[in-house]
Image (cartoon, rainbow, N blue to C red):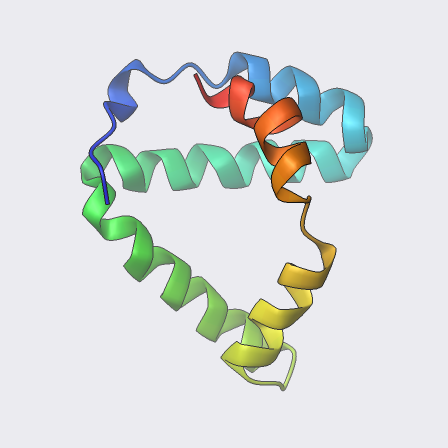
Length: 93
């Protein structure tokens, strides 16, 4: 994994997008989640895989499923690679 200078990352462009789509309470929850993930990344981006694994396991327990089921569900709902590169990646730069 490459190292990114997370202290320089400005969440405002992404937050504005999330306030517009999906907007409302869902958008605000996503902003809060990104703030928390950014806090972890700033402590060390090598912690992100551990954070993903921990969150996945907690979700699996909450949903009475498995980590694989959680990840497969998110995979099916995720943006395409093209959409990621064109729409979302620029919000992270």
